[in-house]
Image 1 (cartoon, rainbow, N blue to C red):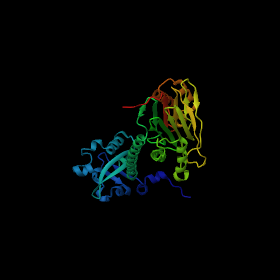
Image 2: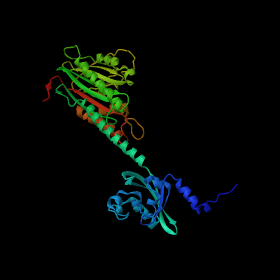
Image 3: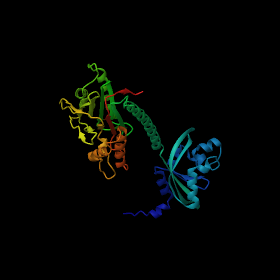
Image 4: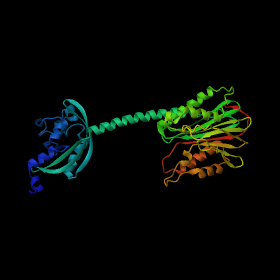
Length: 411
């Protein structure tokens, strides 16, 4: 077997030319004025130049640099040469013998007479060529990659704008304020896992003696979950408008049974949990039905905490079991708390979840606060617990405090 001695091959111009011409990068050797003394075929292909238009010319003129062409000046003499990263890198390597790797260069070149933007990664090395100190410049064309990035950034920007608009629509479906005062003080908080989420809640006053409240949580996150949440919200709105009851009051169990028929898993490829309740102001009577949702809490004025744990299966799972409903009698000062499981399942950096016991503890500790104060206390506790991590799920909290049956419409 014949041994190949690479030390000998390094002295072979033929070997070096073969090596340079088979590199994927454009390669040239230039002096301190960026005058070109040697190059490979990829250099000619990159700028679509012929050999006689490149050799012994400065880089700007040889490549069709926009500044050199439009100002009619040699490379090194244009208005932009002082800030040119390629020139800076080359001179740094030549004068200080410091190699430079993969400097980004974005530049317009006249290629076939047409201004064309090129994105290049430039590396430089100090070399001796024909007995002189020169610079080896290696340019890798990343134009396709960078243009794809730009297109992706544009698309992402449009997606962000669309999500922002969708978030505005979702926010508009949440209650803007409680239109009545006197019987109930109501406060709420909503923070989606991302710009939009699968949580939604609202309240409705069918007549002067009743309020209906609901909160739902669609399985998953983002746009698919939000679309289903909006669909359910629209369904509930139309359900109320089509009610045969002259008062407009619909029983919670009727609502959930209707949802189960309207939102089968096969149609939406998803499911959701929901709590729906109605409160009769005149009697202080709360009626509720639940489909797989975290059970609402009834925090009595005396500090006792009751879990309203009547639950059926989530909507969409197709159990075909009719939903029933339960009733509770409210006393002055009692608070009803609705929430989604994001309030319980938010985790900290140690992987611990906030959990039911912490949640119940915060409610008991802050039982004397107003509805708004309690919402803020719960939200702060959940956020402080997971302050070193991002949200794991949407957070929705609603507190309704029963304060009597004398009603006044808010001005």
